[in-house]
Amino acid sequence: MSTTSLIIGASGQIGTELTKKLRATYGENSVIASDIRDDNTALVNSGPFKRMDAMDYNAIKDCVTQYNVDTVYLMAAMLSATGEKYPEKAWHLNMTSLFNVLNLAKEGFIKKIFWPSSIAVFGPTTPREQTPQYTIMEPTTVYGITKQVGERWCEYYFNNYGVDVRSIRYPGIISWKTLPGGGTTDYAIDIYHKALETGTYDCFLKDNTALPMMFMDDAINATVNLMDAKPEQVKIRSSYNLAAISFTPSQLAKSIQQHLPNFTISYTPDFRQQIAESWPKSINDAQARLDWGWKHSFDMQSITKEMLSQLQKKYQD
Ligand code: SER
Image (cartoon, rainbow, N blue to C red):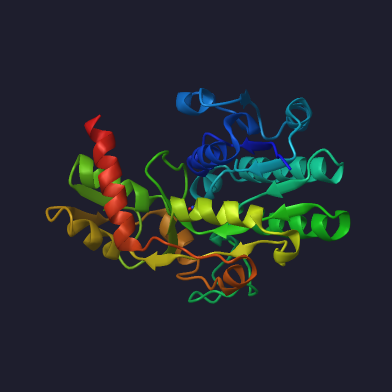
């Protein structure tokens, strides 16, 4: 059976690479990209693109009807650090876009939804090591609150309306193609850019702040595998814990120094330190591994090698 997918927020860090992967797998005309921004020319020119606001229910509905879309990936969101600057805006964007998509499924316009949650659903009262799937969740950021509430609504729509919605609690995602915007884990990308551009990086987190992280290729594989899983394999309809590795800024700096021995790092923690300290250091993702065969491939060393070599090429161009 052929599927047509719509990616909302396709110009973002994960959306760009997800669009590319799905177009390579299903054909460019089977994947409609959309975003409120249309300045990502590579994306706009690589297949159908619709300029769209994720908060505009009618625009999404028109697009879904026009292209016969059956699956929606909702990748638009305001992340943790920006969300603290614009709390109401973050709440409004993150919740309205989710309800738009859940209601389209409830009303029978689409069949399947992917919606990302985050490690931000956890908070200072959550056990921080090997954080279990089911545990205390008292998020303190607006972003975390929207993701936790969103998870509850996903499960509610599955239980009460039979909506096939699937979700992953992404850790910090490391990638070189598109920059992230406004996240607390973004230091783990900035650091590679600065290492190559200037040879030094001033980190906004403390040296020993451990956070769960993952390379983009692993995150995309997880997303595709979860969406390809048979419905009965998807036993969790709120959101799955997902893990690959955990490291601190100083450990990451050391892995860069193995390639660039003159690289130096300093630390000037800002408001993001408090956010990072409220999140887990490591995640227990046994359920995802059991239910739909999740397995990661990239460790910190292989991420550093790949990031430096890909970004080196980018800076040479
Ligand atoms: N990467 C996100 C952030 O830092 C977490 O989901 O906000």
